[in-house]
Amino acid sequence: MHFQLSEEHIMIQQAARDFAQNELKPGVIERDEHQKFPAEQIKKMAELGFMGMMVSPEYDGAGMDTISYVLVMEELSKVDASASVVMSVNNSLVCYGLEKYGTEAQKEKYLKPLARGEVIGAFCLSEPEAGSDATSQHTTAIDMGDYYLLNGTKNWITNGSSASTYLVMAQTDASKGSHGINALIVERGMEGFTIGPKENKLGIRGSDTHSLMFSDVKVPKANRIGEDGFGFKFAMQTLDGGRIGIAAQALGIASGAFELATQYAKERKTFGKPIANHQAIAFKLADMATQIEAARLMVLKAAWLKDSGQSYAQASAMAKLYASEVAMQTTIEAVQIHGGYGFVKEYHVERLMRDAKITQIYEGTSEIQKVVISREVLR
Ligand code: CAA
Ligand code: FAD
Image (cartoon, protein in one colour):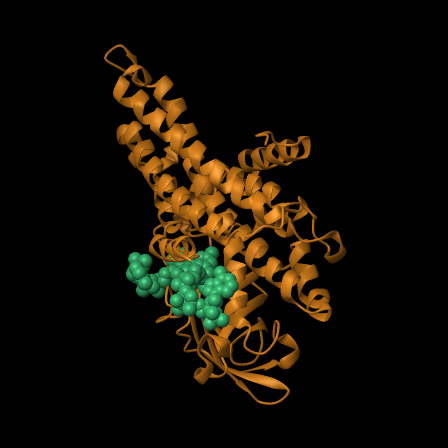
């Protein structure tokens, strides 16, 4: 066992760090304030290969491993978690789902432009009454022979108004429960598909979150992913990997706040010395550093398990559960270390604190991660 990143990993990490400082940091406060989608920044991320990082070059992706992906997610999330969630959904939910389970025709038509970052994808599982309880799908996809008739509402969809390709889970045969759910590829602009207004959010305000309405949308049978009834397993297996991305996002939010707090603690003086020299502050930094290190090891381990073909569902749930709690605690302490300055926008830590909260909620709440972990340990 060795705890050493490869030269390639260090290079991609540095490229992401530079990109975050040079391209994401300018304007991040304004994008947050005005809920402005980082469209220009996402285009540049596509040029760097960040939008289809793990997709094989055969399908126009960058062909990198999950370790590279989490390193990039951490670096971007230190500065702009709104941009990183766009990347996370596109990579680990939409591209991964299509590459792993899609047909050749689906990969040609949908995966390639997504992997090149020319278009953006969305993953649509949650509904007004089916969030944690994801098997209770009310959206229906009635089998009409050569197409499905899609009706219902999806809630909280990241990339809701910026995506072109939507992976939508819907119930075809309620009598079969979760085995009667299908995953369908829905195109923006299909007749009967409308997008609701943008949600006004606490955090990740640059990302666009919308509800989606489907009214008698005709989705060709060729757009179903996998066998009839595979949709719920598709969603769960895809989320197992997605949670590694959100864990890396949480890690980045925590380490971004830690870096800012450390720098500030060295510069800010009270009672004749830098506040870092007050043990109460130094110990906060020690706790933050320790927790971040543990979270980083968990995130990297989950990524390594996935890359080495081993099962990673439990490791990814643990990494997300822990890293998201570290993100919340660390950002609260980073604001505290900044005192009054932490409470205003130009010092960045208040945004990181607001952004941290979502990592405990989406891709399965912390309580749901405990459901997943406890089922595994009790198996
Ligand atoms: N891999 C493969 N199959 C799985 C699975 C997994 N990880 N998890 C469950 N399944 C299978 C089960 O084996 C079962 O199949 P069988 O009947 O053949 O045994 C079937 O799926 C139903 O599973 P459960 O009986 O375990 O279902 P449940 O109702 O108890 O719910 C749950 C399980 C883990 C709580 C699940 O509902 C869940 O993960 N909920 C959270 C949903 C979630 O994470 N949503 C995220 C939306 S996307 C998002 O949020 C993106 C973003 O923000 C950026
Ligand atoms: P509920 O399921 O109603 O949960 C409410 C509370 O009860 C939570 O604390 C929960 O942990 C707890 N709880 C529920 N069941 C249990 C249980 N069995 N045991 C213990 N506690 C439990 N979804 C998508 O499909 N695609 C997306 O792109 C997407 N992006 C999102 C972006 C944002 C900004 C937000 C806010 C949400 C997004 N979601 C997305 C939805 C997200 O995944 C759900 O909000 C989340 O899964 C929780 O579902 P819920 O909001 O319905 O809460």
